[in-house]
Image (cartoon, rainbow, N blue to C red; front, side, top):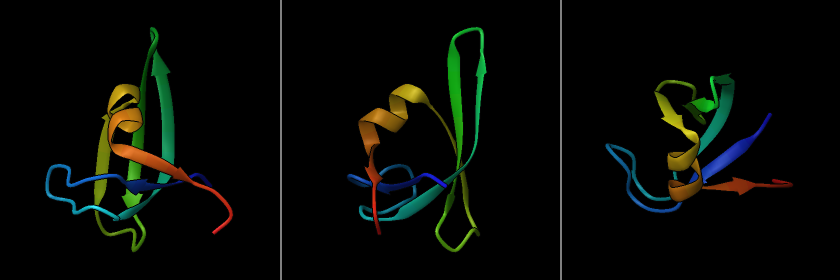
Length: 61
């Protein structure tokens, strides 16, 4: 499962919040991602541009 960390405050989430990617979809060239916080209580739906701008991919934790 892919994991991401928030680079800086975004919407109601604070910097450093960790997320799991629970779904990826692509429709006519537009990718959307559904992310869940590490405790799986909150959900965030974003596009590929927002993912690349606000999140860092975590490896090997």
